Figure 1: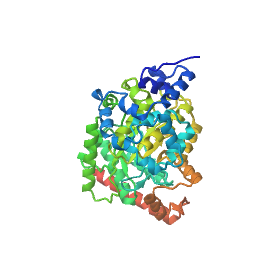
Figure 2: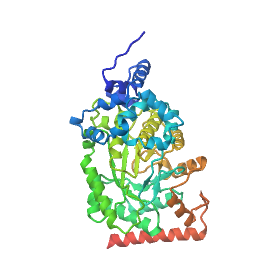
Figure 3: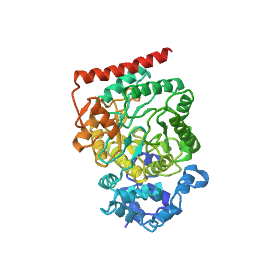
Figure 4: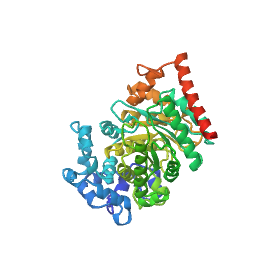
Length: 467
């Protein structure tokens, strides 16, 4: 009989993970399916208390570890500490454990615990458990409620041409997309570009009365400089990771994120806008980022992803999404690994209390295709994913990757009887874009109204730019 020995929790976690090319690249993956099964069996017998007592990355050398331990609700955790990881899985899947029950435990669950139980769950388990949990957030509108599927309208432009961005945004709005955010990835890391994009999107939103929020996904420091110059920042964006060293590679720290959040909240208080909530941060993550930065400390990529969600939770974001296939086949090699990672990330984020969306995507050198996107999109929609990306034809002309399209969101909503965010849904009806919850062919009067308001936004932008 073959026997396996695991030298501590860090190695046990890595060996118990589902197959990931990133873990293989790091040299920490299970060396056989037999070893993977043995690791899962051993992990199932570990108690949550043992995980809490043995941080995988020492807090003395990592500010993320310190944050996670400082915020851990130990009083509420006392009722969970005796459970093994296997028993925790059974608890989460039990019909008697409702989403409200899980919601009451968010702060008592450390990210490493979320990662551990995820390693024992099948894809079906991840969908069933995640579907129970609704994490609602608010900024200009309300996201994450039951029966709601939102979209991030992503009107990127390879030259940051503002008119092109606005035209693409209008196209997506006419398909009912954009309730999560109208978010642009700038091609140029420039304060001037970020400010121009933010001003233009704000004029579009204000002129057309759209209950949504705008974001320019430049580096946080670039956005804050644009804010200092008077640009309207609805959401402050940043990519984050699960270790201090990985975040340093992004040019950020926990202190900078906190400062940014406070500055945006202060700017909101000074603006003449009806905010329905104070969730003002937008974070993106993805398995493999710490490894790609040489900052993984020998910890597997799933567990590090969970730790990134622990970081996000600290700042009460409106939106969080895993860009699940963007990092490339070195970390997620093919459709099977991408689908698994997407379901893992979504479940872990929701278990930790986050408003999880997903950029269901792949790069052109991965072993995946449009059918891969379709498969994961509908699995995540069944699991209660808060939002997806909405990109013209699913092909981003600036980032050069494949993701979900305007039509994908419509199909998921129609097949699963899901709706846009409630405030946004009312706006779609008022503009004549939707009728009784369904998109309609625009009447001449509705078409004229939309185009006239959109033209007014363009004219305001042009006048302001020349001025």
